[in-house]
Image (tube, rainbow over all chains, first blue to last red; front, side, top):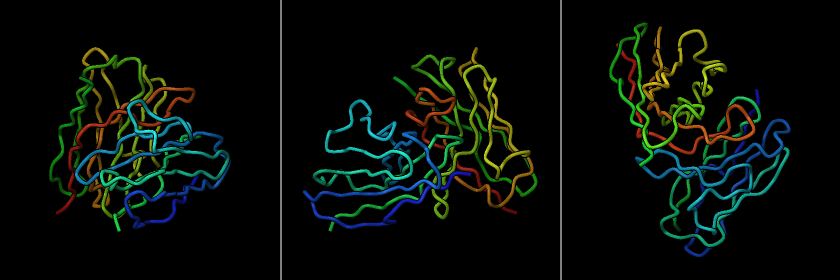
Length: 106
Length: 122
């Protein structure tokens, strides 16, 4: 089974900061990776698909990159409404999620 | 409006069964694979099962294989999850999710329901 290692598990940043989250796959998954945002009490929301494609309606401050085993999710300028937990998810075989990164405002 | 509405959750004793349902609206249900994803505070998000648009491809997480059965009724725009031999560790919020579509059979989840809570406890 493919394992996804996401880091950090939590982070605190200031409004306007650049924020980066990483996800590492246990084997090559090409670009079969998505990123989700989940706010408290809500269902996850798809932000990035195929590693780097922005879902329709998602602000351009969100971006993704990577291929193979190493992937990065970036918020270019953190906004207060970005406080949430972020998950990566691979779909090279059966879907598997990363453990999540809880993002807080400093 | 694109919408998924789950139902059927509740409190059930270990070893018993429960059937979850998901009503879909606002999109061409029979064009997309569908999934069940669950979430617990301790274990995060876990994909449970997926079914292709025509039910030809069905897969399960190892943790539920042999106990859960996914099915769909394209005529009624509905998705179901029959859960048998329930265990304490199946306690979670269960989401119905629409597949995004793409090159793979299962690609990820672009529409989610609000979830239905399943609690397995004696």
